[in-house]
Length: 116
Image (cartoon, rainbow, N blue to C red; front, side, top):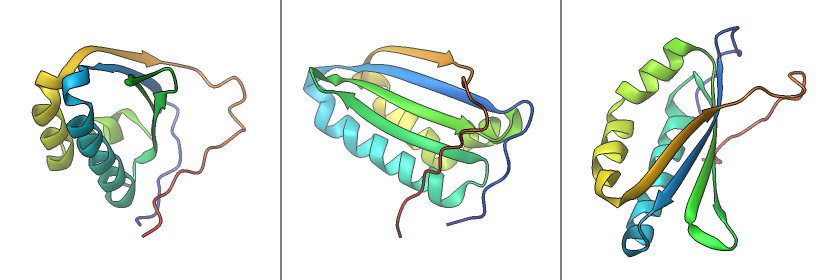
């Protein structure tokens, strides 16, 4: 795992809310897990990539994403692994909402890692 960058003033905390077509949920989950793991393991500016499914609707996915800066986010979406995810899942997504949020307690830090 790479050393992580500190959160900058222009850092991003985002909830990505994704509705996956039920026909593709199994395939989508493979893409989502792969891009999350690679991002956390290789990108210093990706601080959190935590995906969850709604217990009552497994096709409703929410991903908590933290990026150290705007530049870290731009680097992430330009990465080969993100582009593989994005292009590979376009036809699987019924809706996508990217909601930038403000932590209520900025001193509360999330430590998100993948055990190698």
